[in-house]
Length: 140
Image (cartoon, rainbow, N blue to C red; front, side, top):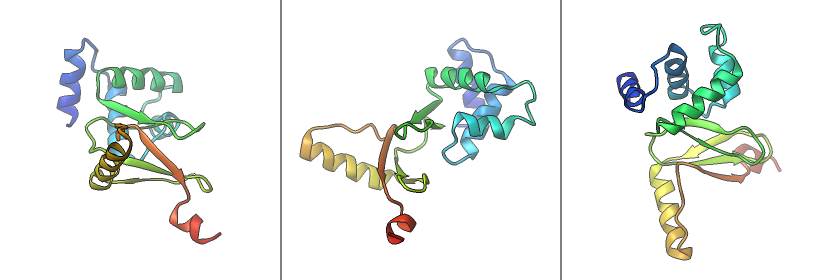
């Protein structure tokens, strides 16, 4: 899904196409695990009228229309990604804070195993697992 699809989705749901919305979507599409604050930092020079509350309001609209989703990592800021990304599970390091992901095959296998063992259906678009990354676990 690209800019033309984003515009069509927004129009079909009765929202205006704004340069700020498109810039936020582009930033999410080209960034790895951005927060609202990192989106704002990335755009503050190219979009001088943008402020952090505008980023949050636009993220709410983009989630409402189904273009963006987010995941929470404990008490930290949520991270955002395009809703059409393949299902994945975020891995959050408790020591250094680094966030990485496992891809669709690993996420799907994990979700199937959890379903088979417990009957619990995992939403892999919203999932985070906490632990220690490779670097932190080997430096113990």
